[in-house]
Image (tube, rainbow, N blue to C red):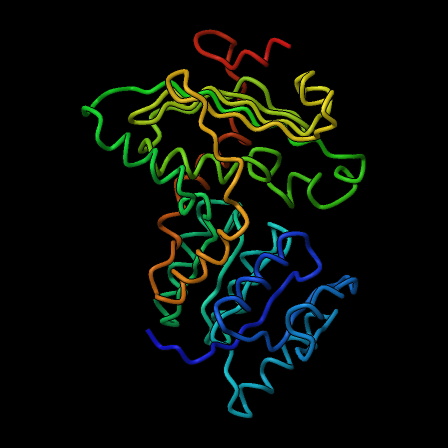
Length: 316
């Protein structure tokens, strides 16, 4: 592995998740040359790369990256933390400037966008990596190894519950616009669907029982699992015990009735992901495909009649 510091650009630096990318770039010994965001509340840069350039207009950022290239300074990677619907365009920007792209999930909103981007990978010779950090969580890795050791054909029963309450701002922001975020299953559920597919195999069937702006629920059958899932940003869906403790998030996954405890260990997963990407072995478009197809089907499916298996919270 080449230990020479790599040059990074970062798009969407004002967003919440961007700081994990800043930390990962710094902790892997690399440098941020320039960043972009339409919002200028980006003082967090000072804690990581105070000498890097910052732009609020894409055109100026584009020109700056081109000037760097013409002066002999090439971006090696562009990290993308922008709103979901802009990922495709910003990935194309990275590859057009002969850099690899490191993109937050979902890498794109539609499955056919993956096909088009793979063509651009072939044309440019540069890679597109997706942040699928749950695949590096020690508890998730242990579960995958345990499931792989079970007899072939065994179907495991999974309950996935993720309630992460959001305020009124959510509906006003791009996250509340299904055309920009992909809706709730895409925005807060895609990394769980990726993790489940990684462990339990390909999708066999995908039924949706509830699909609203603030909550969704359905049943996902995988090769080796039956998954009842419920996602919500509605505070009222939180368990009473969570509310009493002042919590605004409740995450619970059970596998064959046993709770999977992985609330700890998230802090450094972006850094772990970056280390793998820098070795050239990070997760790419093919790895992301099934979860993108799954959430696309969820938001475009007709609701199924509530028969058979469904998450118990849907009745609430």
